[in-house]
Image (cartoon, rainbow, N blue to C red; front, side):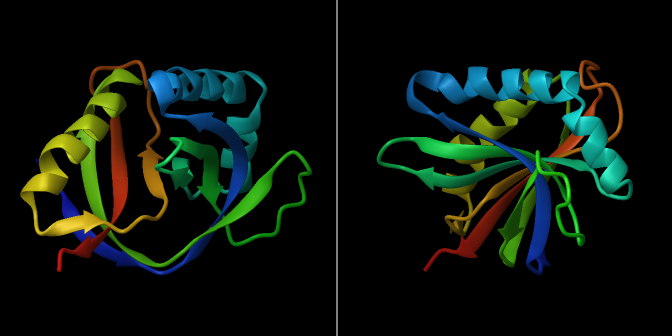
Length: 160
C-alpha cells in the first residue's frame, strides 16, 4: 500500500459539518448524501472560491468510539476569518500524518481505501492512530471517473 509520512503544523479550515454515526454503516450513506447536498446548494463552489489554492477536504472529527458518533466536514484550509454565516471554522492540530494517495470512482474507491487502511495497513505497521481528525483530500477532476485522484491523511504515532 503506497503511503508517505509527513509532519504538518496546525491549520484552520472553513466549511460545513454533518453529525453522523458509524452505527449500522450510516456514515457510508450520510456522507455521500452530504456531498451531493453541498454540491447542489453551492457550498463546494463557495469554498473553492474562498480558497482557490486549496483542495476540498472531507474531515472526520470528534469520533466517539463508544457510540460511533462523529462529525464529517466538507471544508478547505483557510487563513481567513469566516464571514459567511453559513460556514464554520475548525482548528486541525499539528500531527504526524500517514498520507495515502489513491484513485478511483467515488464514493466506492474512498470507502475501500478506508477499509484497507484500518484492516491492513495500521495492524501491519509500527504506527497507531493518534486519535485526531482524519482527512480526505479531493483533487480537481471528475469524482465519477475510474482514475479520479484523492488522498487520505491519518494522524499517527509510533507504537510504543
